[in-house]
Length: 89
Image 1 (cartoon, rainbow, N blue to C red):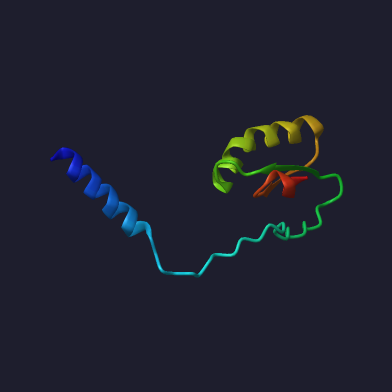
Image 2: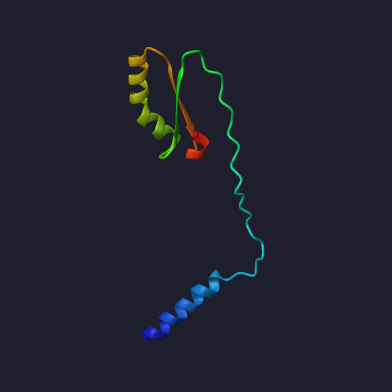
């Protein structure tokens, strides 16, 4: 009885996954456009990273490093975040 119930459940799951829809989602492999950088004041050090956690989490994680570099180099430091490493490059 157990085998029949398991087989019936498997068949129902497989049938539920089947669909008559022939509409396919198109995927673009073209790189997304990157928004241009704003002009930074002269002497500003820009540090670019790909946000791994979230934009807020990345800012929180990198803030101590940016502050340290700004103090040591005696110049403004700006964090630039992008979605992927390709955009950073």
